[in-house]
Structures are given as structure tokens and as C-alpha cells.
Length: 382
Image 1 (cartoon, rainbow, N blue to C red):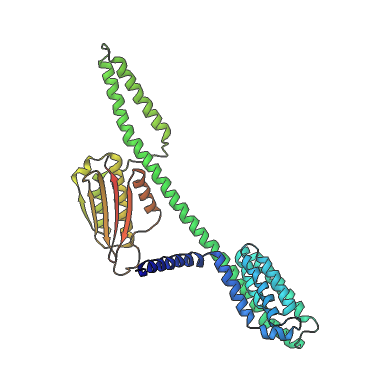
Image 2: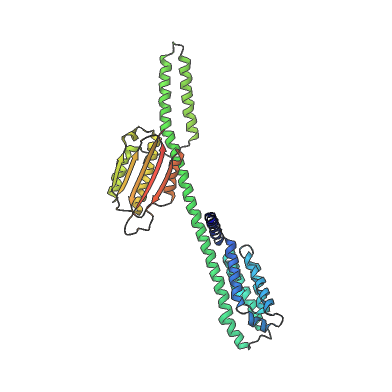
């Protein structure tokens, strides 16, 4: 009777443990702990010899000392010099060369090329001085040979790998910032485009309203409605002025085409090698100019992306205005020669398309299957 609750509790605990493991395994702190543990494991291989050569340390004490030295790697991102100085101490005291590799990598990775080069030079100079001291267990010729063949290469290699990782991080961060900047710029440009469309379409209606009001005002001068029509004309003029002040036009630009321009878009796509099957609901022609402009922009961006990533595939465009919602669906097949490549990019064009739909209170989704890619946008008709 209590088997099912126990099983459910077990599955919940298992799921919680899996989520915790996934979140923890990718965190920087987990990576630092793994690095410190790996360094200690490598140094622990030399525990018997270390305890035998250094009379002041026995096996357990040597393990404690090595573990304490590895603790500096836990702060290698914020303070890599702590691990570096600890590693130099280990070289001078225990002739331990494992920790310095992790320390030099950390300095190069998190402090850059200049710090990595300085740390490497300091390590080489310090190690040379230690190896040249009297009392080193090997003959001087063998000491110099070990220094040139082992000590210098491991330090230079560890530092070089760290510096390369640092440069890779910089390039990746720069690429991320460029992508974010491109998306933000595209969104801003789309907002400006929407504002210009508002100016074009609403401004035209306000102009007509002003003219009609002035005509009615002239015709009703001798009636009791003359004052009301004059106030209406003044209100329309002020609204037009306010619209011009709020929406700053930058350069000349034609208004965004409406659904009448979709046929030309389809023809252009067909000439470029991507034929289009267009299904257009006649009721779409009765939509407001802003929504027609949104339809045009969505279809235009989808055709552009399909031409980039699924060239030669037939593109199906369906625009329906049934009910209170306007639905735009653009579907294309995936190219067989490169089936794993996404047919629609996630770049600035997609961001501007999403911004256009969102600004009108709509939603946009993209769905990829094994053989097709579909973008669906919904907008309120009113």
C-alpha cells in the first residue's frame, strides 16, 4: 500500500539530485574544487618518496601539507598569485613541481599574458636558484640537465596554455557582446521602423481629419456647431504636431509595404531559387496598415532566412484572419545536404521580427522537426 508513495518520493529525490548535480557541475566553484582535487591526486602519487626524503614529514603529515597547498587553487580565479606563491614555497621546501603547473596556468588564464610571462620568468629564476643550491641530491650536471629538460618546459607550457585560454575567453566574450549589440541594434531599428510606420499611417489619418474638420468648420460658420468644429480642427492639428515631435524621423524612408507587396516578395524568392506557395485570406486586406506592415516584415524575414539556410526548398506561406486573431505561418523543408543546420538563424533579423510582432501585442514561435522548420506569428486583429 505504501509502495507508490515511496516510489514517487524516490523519483522526486532523484530528480532533485540530478538538477543539483547539473547546476553544480557547471559552476566555477565546482571546477575550482575539481582542479584542486586533481592536483592533490597527482601530488599524492609522490607521498612515499616525499616522506622518505624529507625527515620532517611522515606520510599523513605530508598528505596534510599537500592538501593545504592545493587549497590555494580554490581562489585561483580571484587570487591566482596565492597558489603561485604557495607553489614556489613547495619548490624550495619539497622540490614539488606539480602545483606550479596549475598555478602558472591560473595566472595566465585569469590575469593575462603580461602576468603569465612575469610569473613564468619568476618561476624559472627561483627554480634555477633552488637547483643550484648546495645539498641538492643529484650531481650538478644532472641537476642542470633536469632543469633544462623538465623544469623550464613544464612551466612555459602551463603558462602558455593559460594565456591561450585567456585570449580565447576574450574572443568569446567579444563575440558575445557583438552578438548582443547586433540584436539590440536590430530591435532598436525595428522600434524606429514601427514608430515611422505609426507616423506615416496615423499621420495620414490625422491630416485627413484636420482637413475634413476645417471644411466642416467653414460650412457651419453660421450655425451653433461652428465653434465645435473649429475646436475639433485645432485638436487634430495639435495631435499631428505632437506626433511629429515624439517620432523623430531620421532620413527619408518609404512606408513599409502591406499585404499587397507579398506577391512581389514571393516572386523575388522564386527567382532566387526558393519557390513560394502563398495562401492569403482576402480578409487580410481589411486590416489596419500597421498590421499589414507587420505581416510583410514577418514574411520578408522568414523568406530571407529560408533562402540562406534552406535554398531550393519550397516555402509555404499561409496568412489567415479568421476570428479575433491574425495568424502568419511560414514553413520550409530542410535541405538534405545539411539536415543538422538550423534553417532560420537566431540573429538580429529574427530579433527584429520578434520585436515587430511583440510591439503589436502578438507572439512568435519557431518549431523545428526532422524535415521542416515553421515560424508562426499571431496578432490581434483589432
